[in-house]
Length: 584
Image 1 (cartoon, rainbow, N blue to C red):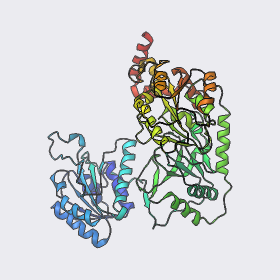
Image 2 (image 1 turned 45 degrees about the vertical axis):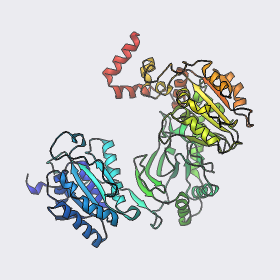
Image 3 (image 1 turned 180 degrees about the vertical axis):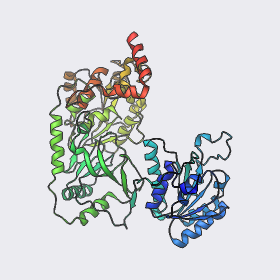
Image 4 (image 1 turned 90 degrees about the vertical axis):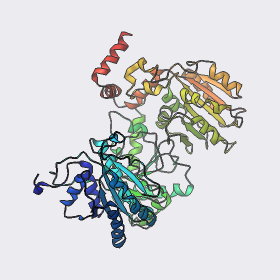
């Protein structure tokens, strides 16, 4: 290859790295010789933006970088190959760690699948000493959109870490395919993620369509509610919630039923700036923001919507107050909020008859919750169903969305109930989640402020529900995917006997009329003489049909789940399973 043809490597992770280094203003690089880092080194060598130095000894190269970074008061990059060359960086990186010197150590490497296979020049760099670098990232070769997104986020995070919390060294393990193609003459425009702290000037929000997305959130202070309401008033913003967001201010919107439509995409869902606060949400909302700003004291990159551009390592109070103080116009008419309200009203008007199911129960019961209660949900179907319908104002909602497992939801409810014996605590869980956490209801500290509703369909019905790609497998999924027929197989006496033996009052229902009658007891605002367990028996086909109705309020399409199953399994395997089921 003629050197005149050398531009940038065709390896996309290299292009992304170089593009972001340039956007960050990082230009000084000290290179040690080798073959594994050729794609990176040849690419920066051909770009006159970079000032490249050569040093054969990696130990010296890293110490040189320390000296240069301190003198320039800016980050310096070091690059070497993946074998013991990378180990020679360790003394200088240790020095940099304790002196908080911003060194970006790029150790190029072969794919990690080769580690431990006696392949030459392959070492395991998946773990590093605690006092060597602030963070270590593995940057895989880009082979699809998911890998590209991952590379962009990780490299952005690495470059932010060079400065964040006082700065320090950061490590990138950069995978290479040893491509000899250097014909790329223009770098891609890569999404830059910027970080802001208390000292920094904040970017403008003027003339933007703004929404605040709140994931799972602790109870809001009155002060924060007032601040956010004031912000929304000035900027014409709305607050998008699920049942664990716990914001009950003026601009609350519960958008899930509108966001879930298969055949209608409202203009509401298109957002200029989505301000993301709180933790994990279990709502699975379809939103289409142009960019996301994350606000959290941890300062971490949480790129839920894959368009993160800014991270604010400040408190929520400070962030919203800052924009209130900086606002120079007059308060907006909140036309965006009005649009959301109108669209939701139109969507709810499409609701017809819903079969007896989780969804029907949520719709019927959501406004029956006594004032100032807390409600704990099991993950997925329980939380999803209640996310469609607004609850009594002020109700606090919780769900174990952090680890997102079925274990522990009843225990979390009971633990919360200890805090205030005069407050009602409700739980909505499926049968598998209940039995998984069964030992908790035998705890002797349980008070009469606990009420647990068990939706018993005799299986993990999630995997038979409309929209789940396992749904077209039908009864084939019951034995192992749905774990059906365990725990008494919808026994009418098992939970009843356990509940009464442990001092609970027991209620049951297997149709709408029975539910309506017993719900008057379960949702009663007065403390009962005993804790209550309410077992509600539902059927698989009705659970699935209820979701199909909710997802297709504007019209009924072909099954989305069928297409998902075909895509995942492949047409041949999908047809084979369907044929097997038909023969049965």
